[in-house]
Length: 414
Image (cartoon, rainbow, N blue to C red; front, top):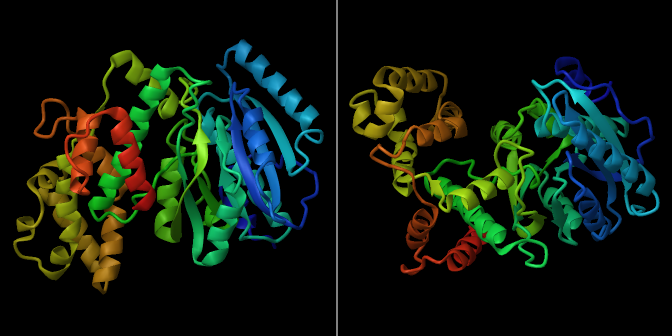
């Protein structure tokens, strides 16, 4: 019996795509969704140039389109697919390239989540064929290039600690002025400042799962992928949902070295992320983000879990008013009582509380504050400046370039 049999009997998946035998030395399978993206060839070129050091590599590219995809994009996808098949052995001899073109995917499921799931499910099948539940499945996007030690860094992270079954990778968008307009680079730096601002602010709250959730920047073992029930088919944010399913189940390591360089270009291939955000920032000439003071409210809530465990009296003396107003006294009492009833010690109580008040709760709570609220969204640079001051970086810094460099440095070391 294969380690993946139960997964494929329980969860919907495509039938097997590839009949090509799996090399028993395969250690990593990189999965890349591709939709209307000729940049895929640069991505594969960068993988071709990575240092392998006897690491067995396969790359699965899922070219995809939906029922409502314009014919022009379908034709572009077909040309990309045909070219990939042609170049498979000529250009990409350092790894085994497997390519599938999915067309007419139902509108309900069409998109990057479905394509990523299709490729990662296939990676599980291939690791299953060689009996390798600890085989590494790496998620990448078709608009990225990777550092030369990409494979070695990922492999060493898993080998250095057998408890690690997932890892996130550090990134920096490709700000090559020869390739991209200054306004695009400037807007993308704003967006990247926000990504790092959000992660670092979330870390300050005491919430344990404060990692980046970016589709091109994580890896997971085949067995951990299965335990989490596989990738979500969401048309955007599938990476966020998946990683926050994985997090409570295993140890997630963060690779601090920059290994992935996504493109900063404008794109509408996904509902949110780099492409749409860059377009929005350019069009509106401003970027509003979650108010920095809100993270102090969340911190007060999470830091008092010990108080909630130790007492049934005056419970609401410890909970911030903003949380009480958002959740309601009745619901809070019910949830906290349920957590206490089903746990025997403080550690298990905190873990259960984190599952009730998880990342989805935090996002919904943050999104409940609009421009007319007590904590209105702030200008991105203003919020980032407050975070930098919290970390002891001198005030007065406000220029995009300076803030970007400072917050990148903090994010790479925290």
